[in-house]
Image (cartoon, rainbow, N blue to C red):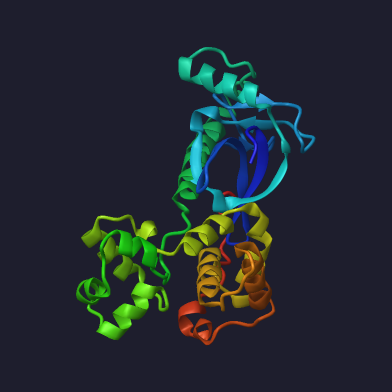
Length: 287
């Protein structure tokens, strides 16, 4: 992602808003909320007249928000260059006039609507900030190399996780998954982070599924299996873990999982009621 680019944000197959990228990290991205000409905006929003959409847009540098990269749907084009983003951010930090003009003050008649919209905007973006994935809510496989390096043995797993010896050996080798509660229990005992305990592939797949390039395929999985987006992501990640290993790259194997799920082919455990939650149909907060 490029600083200054305008993006459409979506979740659960619904558009959630527009954001201007100010900084990008693996799992989250900092954005300025963007408003449309139809919104009753007021300072401290700034007015950007030349935009990829061909209409003026209004950015809120004072309300920069960190959101999950999973929300990013597709780029709409460059809105500001990086130097202008940085200069504007510095001006807001210093309390000096920004290089981009503020939107005009609303009329006396328009002030109540602008005040209410400002409050609503805070609520909307707080809600977007609360959307997180992955949450490690699914089964995952332990990383044997990490366990050995930490001096953990199968007998440790058997004791901590209340497993039979044979099951503990399988979990130790990464041959069978553990639940999120089991991984968290093990993390507390060992002092390791939960993500250190899971396989490298699991972590890499989670990072890949955050990339916008997979958003459309995830949308198709969500619709095909009639689950929400978070669950669709969980299913893809779990299917990847359960899929037969090959010499292919993570990306090629992941694309194979997508192809199978979109075509309607799943492992038997995906047909249980645990994965039958319907896609939400309520309108988005900003509709």
